[in-house]
Image 1 (cartoon, one colour):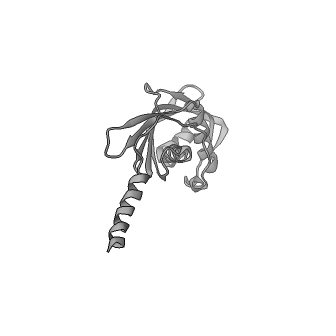
Image 2: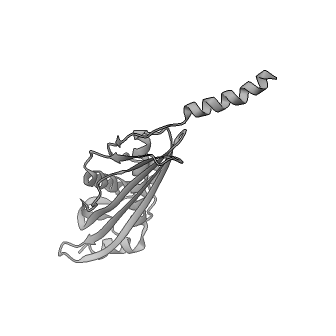
Image 3: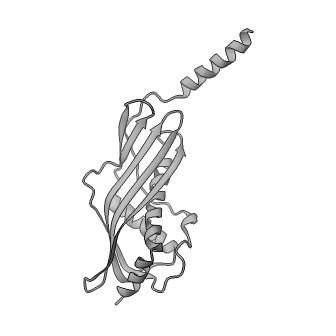
Length: 197
């Protein structure tokens, strides 16, 4: 009888011991890593080149995100010491290359990073969420704006709390999804040709 009583109590103690009781601030380096799942997602392109990809960081709040302890009012900030504009530029260009778009001639792709937010919800493990929004426009050599749109993307992950790798994968996914939504838009594809001259 005692053994039957001991098992549930021991299980409860182990679960309590595994629960996170606080969250600390975290700094996450950003370095885009190519994911093969993003290749060949765009389809055929009549025009497949841009002159350059230029990125500016238009965020007023440079904090990357927030760590939250589930069911408790405990939070901590997430920051990065990386050049976020460079990160976005390299990520966008990597996804473009995976889908047959080259950089060298054609219209300029201007991207203004309006927001980049992560949320890590921590308990025994952690759920990760990232959202990115960019104001995008294609501009011809003469300065004509051929296309502009706000593009957005989300990423999600789950695993150990405070995992730099989970953060990086989540933000990479959000950036890749935003880029793919832009590249798949027919208006963007048309503007690549309209802006080529």
